[in-house]
Amino acid sequence: MTQTVDWTARSARIDALQVEVCFLLNDTFYRGDENSHAQLHDPAFRVPLPLPAFPRALPLLARSSEVSGHEHELAAYYRRIVDQAAALGKPFNAIGHYFWLRLWLWQEGGAAFSFPWYDTLGEMHPLLDWLQAPSADAPYSDIEQGWDFDALRIGETIHLRQGDSDSGEEHVNVALPAGALAPAAAQAQKRAAESIAALALGLGADVWTGHLPHARFGTATWQPGAR
Image (cartoon, rainbow, N blue to C red; front, side):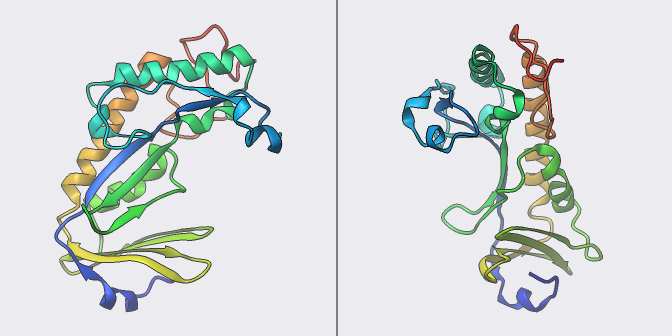
């Protein structure tokens, strides 16, 4: 989508959105060859992966607000992934997706914004920073294959829109008070950073803040990426 103000006339007015950084979870571990299409789609090459026991609204999504205070349980879950990979001699780039995050902005029972191309906290920082200090002179915009997002401040109102850049389809388009998102964005960013720091301390590597080609974990005899 182009960065024009035309779409703001269609924005649905709402009072607030929740902001959350989430840890993606998997209930199986893939033991096969990453380059084998047949094995990737064969359940025989997947083994159960025990999930953390702390309460979550969604089984395969752990919000930072849910993780807070339970980092040791989440670290144990990630350690099982590292140990599985160690036993099979898998390189880190074969398991990196098990550590992906997701950013969500949503209204209960209403509008929801997803960011499927943001896998790390570092990729979320620019938007989270902008939401805390939305600038009328510098709108936020991002576009990837099949997805685009625009954020624009006009006076004391923020307009947010998400759609499909390939088809031109608009999925969500809302407007809300400029100060409504700042506290939620700041809290989500802070919670996620604190949980990641605790996880990195427990596993010996920070693989959530940014993409790493290699990682050396202190919890396994095998070190993915070690040379």
